Structures are given as structure tokens and as C-alpha cells.
Image (cartoon, rainbow, N blue to C red; front, side, top):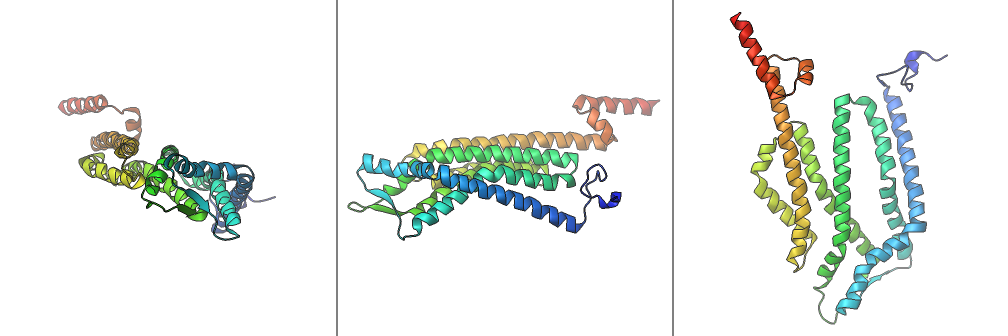
Length: 294
């Protein structure tokens, strides 16, 4: 029969989930293998079922250029192995996206036993906000992709053709969508930094002009061309996310200030949990005055 101190994997015999370094490495390896297998399966399914629809979708802007603007734009495979290379690349990209919930789940199962309840709450809040913001960025970048392709190819000289290397075009689409979506996660990171107490909401709010300039630069780089409205369409959701993040930071600052004021008045952590309003603090102040008089 195994001794209790040897049963490191059992939550019942080891509620604090303490593990030796060797056990940590073994668990990390096992979860990494599970996530890699999920990615491989998702990549194979992507190659079989999703590759052609994906290529058709991202090629649609080039077809519209041919039909509407009379300019020849097409994808080109420069070598014999290029189609197969692109198939593998696209399958892996889509596979990583489809398997991302498995990666996230395995990562959480590895990290959560080492976190306290408050840290778990912050982690889940940060991940939820990041995933939502990133998904919004992916949706908006997909919606703006055709306009970006048309805007960039409109600078093609007359009597010239846009014969685009397929691998370069795929890389452009992936980078465009990834970095644009990443910009939507920046406000969530800002809230996370504020939760750690490294920056206050008022400090960020005072720099709102720089925030607007930064968002305008990102929108201008993402949506080049002569259509100024496209730039404003991209700025609107980014600015909304930024100012929502600033609002959350301000609310968190007020809550932290109230907590510190109560601690300064001599309240315990337990009493702070049961008394969270300014009226409770004022009442405690009156109680202290009456006690001093008596």
C-alpha cells in the first residue's frame, strides 16, 4: 500500500497538491503531449475539411479585384512543392486555433493547483476578457480583410498584374489577423496591470490623447488607402475597449482605496469582507469617537 506522502497525485491524500520537481516535469510533459495530439488531430481534420473553404474565402478579394476593377490579381505557386507546403501550413494554423481550448484547459489544470482562490478569480477574469477581446479582433479583422487587400493593390501601376506568391499571401493574412486581434487584448492587459497595483486608472485617463493617437496609428496601418471611413470604423471598437478598460481601472482603484482606508481605521480583513460601503466606514468612525468619550 502506498504511503500518503507518496500519493502526490491524489487530491484527497494531498489537498495542497504539493509535488516534487520530477512530478511537476512529468505532469507538464503529459499535458504538453495531450495538447500536441489534439493539435495534430485538429490539423488533419482542417486539411481534409477546412483547407479549401479557407483558401476560397481569402481569395475572394482577389476575385473581386478582377471582376470590379479590371486588374488581374491571382495567387501563384512558384515551385512544385509550394501547394503541398501551403496545405501543411494552413492546416497547422487552423489546427492551432481549433485546438486552443485544449491548450488552455491543459494549461489551467497545470497551474490552478498552485494558485489561491483570489488568484484563480483574477486569472479566470483575465482569460475571459482576453478571449472575448481576441475573438472580437478576429471577427473585425476578417471583416476588414477584403478592404485592406483592395486598398493595397490599388497602387499597382497600369499595365501591371498582381501575381502574388501564395505563401506570402497566406503569411500576410495570418499576420494581419493576429496582430490586429492582439491590439484588442491590450486593454485587458491594462486592466491586469491595474489589478496588480502597478498603474492607476487616473494615470491612464490623463493620457487619453496619446491613447487616441495610438489607436489612430494602429487603425491607419491596418486599413491603408484613401477611404478615411474605414479608419474610423476600425478606431471605434478599439477606443471603446480602451475606455471600458479605463473605467474598470477607475472602479478598481476606488475599491482598493476604500479597502486601504478601512485597514487604516483598524478594521480587520474579515470585517472588510462584511462591510464594504462608505457608510460602514463612517459608522465605525462614529463608534470610535463615542468609545473615546466614554
